[in-house]
Image 1 (cartoon, rainbow, N blue to C red):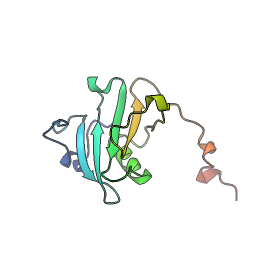
Image 2 (cartoon, helix red, strand yellow):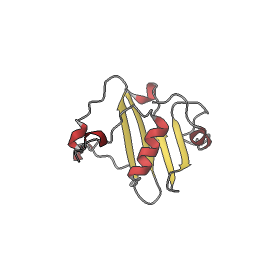
Image 3 (cartoon, rainbow, N blue to C red):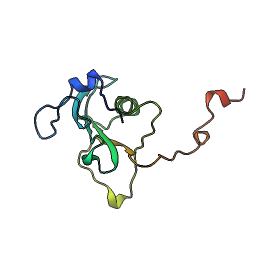
Image 4 (tube, rainbow, N blue to C red):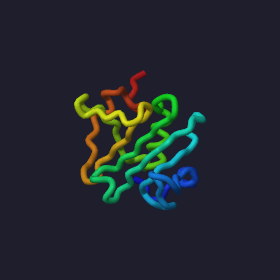
Length: 130
């Protein structure tokens, strides 16, 4: 997870209320305009004691769940291009629906994130056969 957040993210930081934090904190709540013009509310656990071994960011909008473009945008705000994060689909017995239009990004702090072969999605541009 990035240790310094962009000015866009810092400008949207909640400085008062239940989810408040201070400028420069690795955790907090933020409200920013996303890449397609929708307001995004983002909560970050940071990497300290609050994280409990996981980097975690939740992303919500007022009227619908965030789309791929918005989730990718938020991923790039909080993590480097070479870091892998995931969205989990847990067993239904572990579902928690605290907000109806919210998705989550996760990355373990003390383990390498396993990744399936990219070929399962399709060939990379340089691997395509003409």
